[in-house]
Length: 363
Image (cartoon, rainbow, N blue to C red):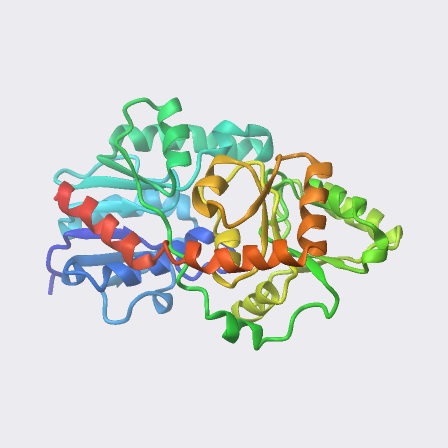
């Protein structure tokens, strides 16, 4: 028996992906939309169905290649279901052709391959540049994680139909629950959460940590998996360890352990040279952890006055910021006080509501 028409088909190809913020966004947005009046008109395409709201129509991908799935399989699925709207969640990827009667929306999380081309691999940069241009030619609405991303997108693609829909932070547990998990280190420690890649400027954090007095007896813990540019970073880690500094790459952590690691940190540091939003520092604020972040537009927009900022790429300025938080009990206490109320402004319910408003305008 044929399935009924679907008003909105959602790209959930990264649902269940453990290492990506887009995966978290996919799962939380799908759950939020399922609680709106659109619930009976949604259809999820791709990804791990177990990570998505139960009882909802879901079509698993037939190929393991997300590129081939999006370009070759999705258009036929949309035509077969008579979908009124398809929403691509993965930054630049939409089907390369538009089925008749279907409108397209696209979430652009960042345009870092265009603004900071040296921080991504050449093949990815080429794919991103070509595909996002084609997607923007086809789409009827663009959702950006931040005003910073919207400005960067529109500077390169004037006239892009872009609006801002912030992400949420209320997936973070209560601070008391997170602190129930044992911390990664009994010593005072600086925590970094994110991929070990070039755009995150982890090398600046390593240089800054080396400038802190060794008598501080603190550690630097790096939570995240190696990515583009990780070889140089890991070599730098080994040099610091050889000099007697306590620097530990701990890799990927299960969710419960990750929350315990964040809650137990003396300071959470986000040294990125570019971000589209910046979930880890916002999660740190939600847990009442002092956050030190690079002064880039997305961080300033999202973190407001609840974090201490430093000049991106400047290890001396970062070292001074870290020392001020590690040494200054009043400064750290003030950041802990400001963090949770700031994070509470960002909810997945609001994200889903604003997204649903875009859908209603289009269909």
